[in-house]
Image 1: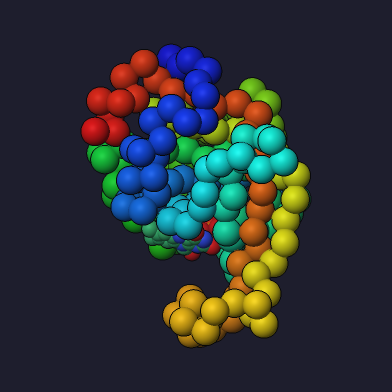
Image 2: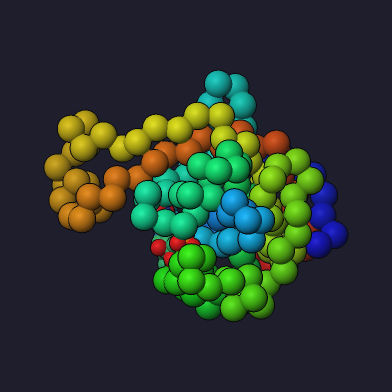
Length: 177
Ligand SMILES: Cc1cc2nc3c(=O)[nH]c(=O)nc-3n(C[C@H](O)[C@H](O)[C@H](O)COP(=O)(O)O)c2cc1C
């Protein structure tokens, strides 16, 4: 991807549209160095401790959980509408069983600032270093969320990823329109 460094607020509306629609692609490496992708629909991009931050929620059952616990970092990749099928696949099969990059025919590239892969074809990518994590606390959760999102337990770990780099293709706006 030919890309330029951008501020996190750039393309914000379109990033949130993708997050709440087809999903975003969370990239990580496993302990053996295999690149994995997981679709996320829950997350937040903002500022915490005066640092640019992506907050993502990953259930312990996900292979991605093992990967982030091992590597301490991840990437958030914003797919175009044309990658919707890839998002569906990366959100329904596990990297434990499948090489998802190969399956969805996307290209992993080593991120410049963290030990995690970026998706070469994605118009916007963020490179994130975990600076904090905590687990969802059932006793502190509103009943309507507890009964909806956690009928099987598997309470998310919430990762706070400091955004070390954010890049967008020159035509990111058109690709995400
Ligand atoms: C649109 C969409 C959004 C999703 N959002 C999340 C999420 O925010 N957190 C999570 O733990 N799983 C989420 N999932 C489920 C994972 O993507 C799915 O379980 C995936 O197969 C896990 O892959 P892994 O085992 O390779 O990590 C989502 C799935 C879809 C289809």
